[in-house]
Amino acid sequence: MIPTHFTRFAAIDWSGAKGARHPGIALALCETGAAAPTLVSPPRGVWSRADILHWLRDQAETPLLVGFDFSFAPPYVERGAYLPGEAAPTTAPAFWGYVDAHAPDADLGAASFLESRRGTHFYLGAADGTKADFLHFRRCEAHHNAAGFGKPSTVYDAIGAAQVAKASFAGMRLLHHLAPAIPVWPIDPAPHTGACVVEIYTTIAARAAGVRKGRSKLRDAAALDTALATLGSRAHTPLARYTDHATDAILTAAWLRESAARTDFWHPSALTPQIARTEGWTFGIS
Image 1 (tube, rainbow, N blue to C red):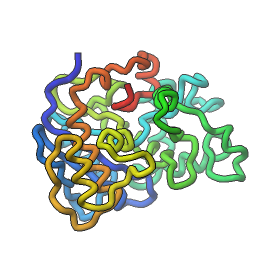
Image 2: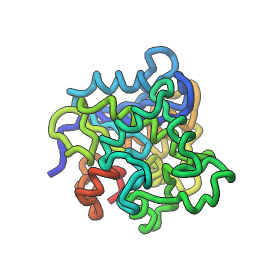
Image 3: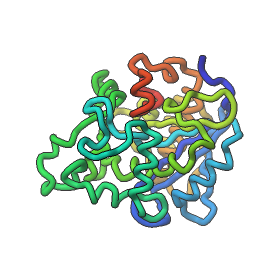
Image 4: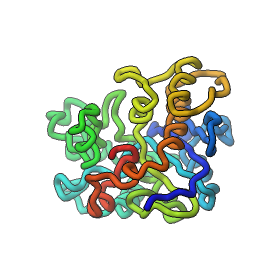
């Protein structure tokens, strides 16, 4: 069985940046049908992570499927621990609470959690040793890579433009504060009423929309409309400014709507109960 009640679809381009206001956060929303997703305006001009948390809580009882582009947990299965040698929890929800308790950063940030563990668990530069020693992956990432879809990032690599570590650990704090208002799939079972949060990978949406490998970012109206049309969406309302964050959110919301009824996305062949409760899974990796 898969959930069939969703009529609203949202994608959130997330940020782990320090501070309390984040231009890198964008939220796009659409409904059943073919109308293009639209950007949701932040309540105070620029989104904070806390604003996103409050917005989500307000949607808890609505038929909303919402995707976040960060890793919902670190790798666990490969080494039998999230942070080997540290007395950390052994399930994703408990680990979210652990991160929250050890990260006093503003606005659900988590940079200090990584910085205080650099060289032991996180790679932040050459002084931390050999980067390859930190490259451990979740099972969904390994599965995705083995299928030939490209090299994934790991939350233990916290340096460079492609790193997902800071955003992911900030996201874990948000998930801790969101629970139990909205189920987080597959850590929680998919609901049949109300909202549900899933992990997304915007590159999967881009590939499904016909955007070629190496050109995943859409920076103009025509390119965005071409990609949206491939997903069965009408043209979007022109934006004042075309940023990667805005176009990623719009395109991925349309993809989420188009993909929500796919049984293989809700029941990936390699997903086990242990993986679900410890690492989670990326919606769209089957």
